[in-house]
Image (cartoon, one colour):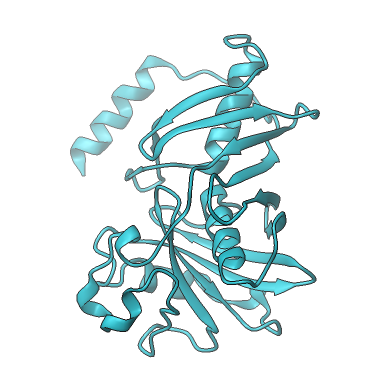
Length: 239
């Protein structure tokens, strides 16, 4: 499974995409409704059907923590911040009130920002904050950014995705948020990550494979005419 962002960049993994991909393969009859192994740039992931045809459970691999895991330029951080779960809050980042920041890799890079409980996520200007952190020189390959508020044992989250901008949901981002929360004792497994587009349920024992369960609902079917590829190629050549 290859994933391309809206800006044409290639992503290592997409948690929402892999659930939709598995649902499509099952619905199309290409594969029986049984566990399905999918090769991605982040490794092989196993998609498992659930009792509901609209929900898919996915092995998302083992989270990795720390600056090295996300390909950061270590020169931008003091030596003490190189420990995997060190709080990476920096005074020069373009927002205040970040209680903690953790670098997490789910096969792709994430920076998880925990904000005070009083924070109104809907009012947070992530369209201006997100790009500044995504493209910070500390992250040469850019980074996905999660803004998180823990309320009533639910991790309310908005995501600025590398190469895509603000999105309704991000599967790998939800996994990174849950992993950081569980690893630092902020939440216990299983935990729900509530995104603008809906919830994702995350189960992780703190050491082994992290599992994500969420919806994959058929919206529409369509076809692409071969001429469309010619138009896209001409457009790309022109730019």
